[in-house]
Structures are given as structure tokens and as C-alpha cells.
Length: 173
Image (cartoon, rainbow, N blue to C red; front, side, top):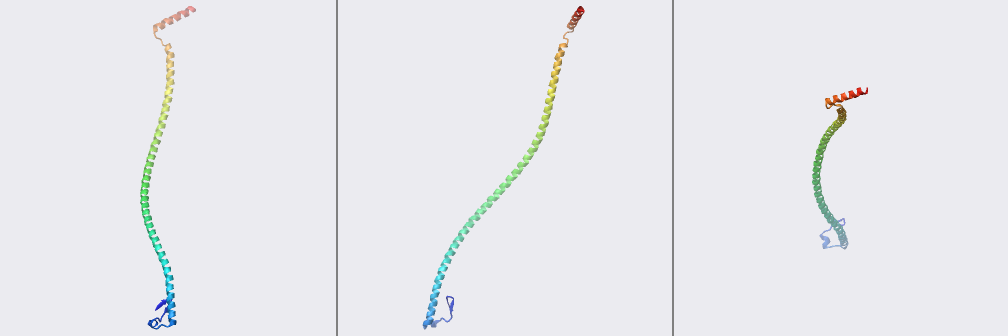
């Protein structure tokens, strides 16, 4: 059986080659020519498909290479990301430790401030007391000076001055 442009010639055989008839031969020759034309058309279509296939295979290989490169880059990015994540965790831990230290220092600073406030109060009280005592000392020194004039240095002289004063007083009377 021979297929010519989708038609089947069922009765083609040796007889057609040994004693061909012109009508049958023309029909068979026309079928063969049509088949050749069909095959040439199909060959150009097949050639276009083959070129497109080669181009697609080439693009596919390029895409595979690009995918391989991107996969390697992705792996490197994941490695870098994991490393950065670990570094971030370390920094966060350091920050937490520093925050704890700051909290402790703040508590210490608060207690020192309270102690400082108390010491300032005591200092002010001592200054006030010192000022009060200084004023009292000055008053005592002034009183001492005033009284020192009244203190008798020698009793005999005082008796003589008193007797002189008494005699003057009697003389004036």
C-alpha cells in the first residue's frame, strides 16, 4: 500500500511496472509528484521546526547555566544570610547584656544620687551650724572683750583706785 497525499493506492503492484496503462500511470505519476511536493513542503516546515528546536535547546542550555549560576548565588546568599543572622543574634545578645549593665548602673547611680542628696543636706546643716557657731563665737569673743575691760588685773591697784575715787567723792561733797 502506498500513501500519496493522504490517498491510498490499494492495487499498486508488479503489473503496473510491467505493463503500465497511461491512465493509471498518469494517476500514479501525479500522485508521486504531489507526494514529492508535499514532502518538500514538509521538509522546509521540518527544517524550520528543527531550527526552532535547536534554538530552544540552546536557550534551554543557557537557562540551565543561568539556573545553575542563580542556584550558586542563592546558596551563597543563604550562607551569607545565615552568617548575618548569627551575627545579628550575637549583637542582640550583646545589646541585652549592655542593657542589663545600664540598668544596674542606673540603679547604682540612683542610690549614689540619694546618698549625695543626703550628704548635701548634712553638709548644709553643718554649714548652718558652723555659721551659727561662728556668730555665737563672735558674740562670745565680743562679750569676752567687753568683759576683759572689767576684769581686774591687780587687786591692790583696784583698791587704791577705789580709795582715790572715794576720797574724791567725799572731797566733792
